[in-house]
Image 1: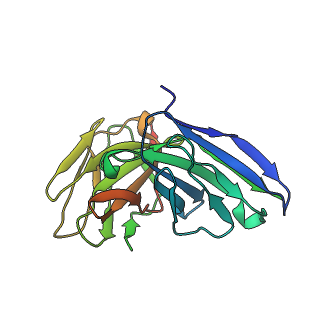
Image 2: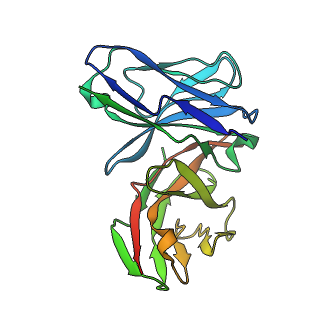
Length: 113
Length: 115
């Protein structure tokens, strides 16, 4: 029972580099989201998807891209990393229109230097 | 959009003390309400939920009642344990077209329970 799997767990990037944070779920959930967690800010929604081929922006989408080619995978791409993107990133998935809440991955801690 | 005002921490209690963490929200429509818990170094876990007015969510001794008239969803536990030490997040969903897939999180309340 893998649930939501995020890789890598830790990453250090230099300013201007690009990378992809991976997220995969094996529960056949239609809804998937990316959040970032910063001290004193709670979690803020970056992008979300309501199904394969459908994505939309959340509260803080700038500097990030997503795609959803399959139900299982929802990668988050940082186009040109900036120190302001230093954060902990969580991927989450849900079924049944979100009524049962989200299952979260264990997070990726990203540092941009 | 939705907004959440959550009791600021940190909250420090002795074992077996009573816990209340206040949460009020603003939302359009009829959101579902959730409490999530984050243990140190881990992701968030769903603690409990309520989907309509006057519903009471409960789990692991924690309870919260959906109060539509006061737009509140306060978290309570009668006797906390050291293992309850964690960060707690209140999160209403956005009800759109019958779906509740967008959550708005409070800033979190750090609870520390001492033996």
